[in-house]
Image (cartoon, rainbow, N blue to C red; front, side, top):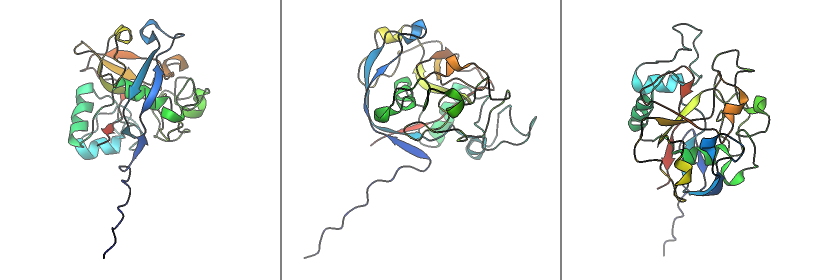
Amino acid sequence: MLGVVAQEPEKEPIGMVFVEGGTFQMGSNSGDSDEKPVHTVTVSSFYMDKTEVTQAEYRKVMGKNPSYFSDRFFDSCDDCPVENVSWHHANEYAKKVGKRLPTEAEWEYAARGGNKSKGYRYSGSNQLDAVGWYKNNSDWKTHPVAQKQPNELGLYDMSGNVYEWCSDYYSDSYYRSSPKNDPQGPNSGSSRVLRGGSWRYYDYLCRVADRSGSDSGSRYNYRGFRLVLSQD
């Protein structure tokens, strides 16, 4: 009788980190009004890009590099995050590579370190200089990804470098009515969520709880993205 051949465990997609689902306290009572109230959220497991999508990765898929900090005006920075992309550009890229933009809840859960969270103010530390590029240390430009320390899950640059688009419509009052399980954001709106702060701004805007929104068609040299995959 032939024995049963054991199957290898599923491997993480290349360049991604497995984020085991769990329950966390989303928001902050000491931040801005749109971060309140702190509320309990449960997210399902997913995979997330270890780093922000780079200029080289974007060019390979989209055939162009819209970044301001590129070889058009600066020394080439293929390993720097792609920026100057709108929400629509990020979503189009995601579809082409078979991934999606993270929900705001997924983003904050991962930035906090998921079920390995140590409760840091920034993603991976209470000292932003250790984990992120921001106004005080960036020399007013983006930097190659994964140069700072990762957070508890092995994710890089979730605080600083470039803001990251999320899938959700933005509402400053959404937390008052957010569902507990896998919230997807409002059903409609005039802007989309941005998270994580950037090279251009102070440390306060790089906190894991900080949130903002902008028109989905807007493009700036301090906005980029990273992607996720749902666990099947």
